[in-house]
Length: 275
Image 1 (cartoon, rainbow, N blue to C red):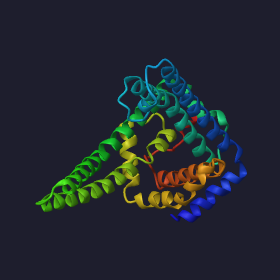
Image 2 (image 1 turned 180 degrees about the vertical axis):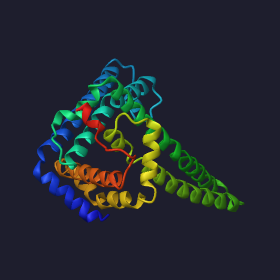
Image 3 (image 1 turned 180 degrees about the horizontal axis):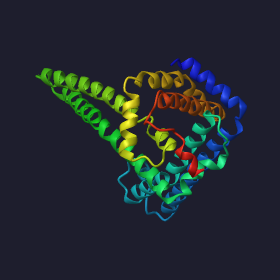
Image 4 (image 1 turned 45 degrees about the vertical axis):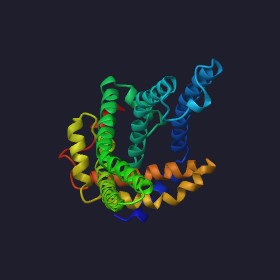
């Protein structure tokens, strides 16, 4: 599977209909901006009342009001944007297959209560597994940083601390590599769910890990190939080219991996009954 061919195919698909992917991005953006505006309004009200101060406002603030607003925004985004995000993947996968599509498909997960809650459970499961995999890297990284800090303040006899710091730094790097592979193991989970929403979540996660085994390099190359586009997105407008382009290339890659031979022994058309 060549990344250049995947990206060219993705561009060819998008040139036939760029308006709908851009509209999908705008819808998600409007949702997110609305949530951010709501949080900003709440914090400004707290500032006006003198309940909090400007220095209290940060992502890792210990202020209970700021913590509450951050947690509330996170929960609202999770419960509202997760189904929309998976709905967007539904749209991209159907479009990549050449099937009839409408922009309303991004809200398809709201049409069925069971599917809605299943999207949340699937996303929560993937997030939990990735956080669990990230924990060792974070732990070793913090310990290493603390040991390096100790060596800076000790006048003598800090050779042992320096050696330990280096060892923990290496463990942090190895753990980070482990996290990347665990992260990639579930790169297909949402796509498999979209293909067959009736499948059990445990089965989806297992299939994603199975299909990604030995294919991690493909996604790593795909991610790296888009890395040089990131600085241009500061200008905002290029994002309406880069994001649909990346989403379609990611979808084409996922579809290719899922449909290689037989994913789970039956035709992948069960999602159609939800449309």
